[in-house]
Length: 138
Ligand SMILES: Nc1nc2c([nH]c(=O)n2[C@H]2C[C@H](O)[C@@H](COP(=O)(O)OP(=O)(O)OP(=O)(O)O)O2)c(=O)[nH]1
Image (tube, rainbow, N blue to C red; front, side, top):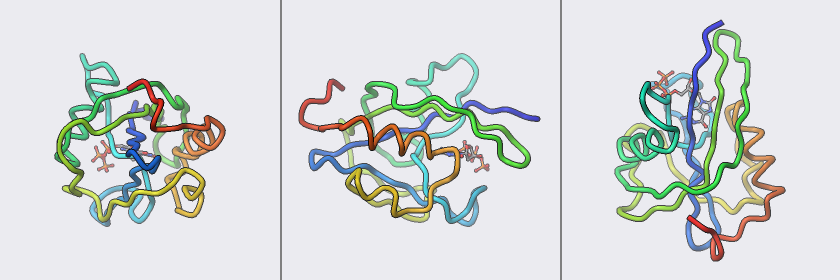
């Protein structure tokens, strides 16, 4: 089966909320929530890829921090290895260029959304990490 490496940004704001993105009807997995990001291209580090994808998808610049989760999920036709990192916005404000909708949610509310299945290890890691935006080293 085809396997792709995908990188996702867990973007935190000063209120300790996380940016959640709704996949649109034009995308695969429509109507499911995800961490913005995309496929890692050849000759790119995951971090470089993430900065590029966020610029394209959300029109803003991020700084990338520590790894949250690295796990593979087998969909019916593709295996997605999703690597997620903490990140914060250092320039601009997020605009949904490709997504249906963007929302900020506190970590303890993330479970209320219907996430792409590949994202569940990240959600689990976030709820056990006890993250505080104030003392993040990003
Ligand atoms: N960006 C992102 N993609 C995710 C997440 N969870 C998850 O299963 N995916 C899947 C959806 C896509 O199949 C793939 C990412 O591809 P992509 O975002 O570059 O999308 P794309 O436009 O190239 O592909 P597509 O939507 O046309 O399938 O990984 C996530 O949290 N973030």
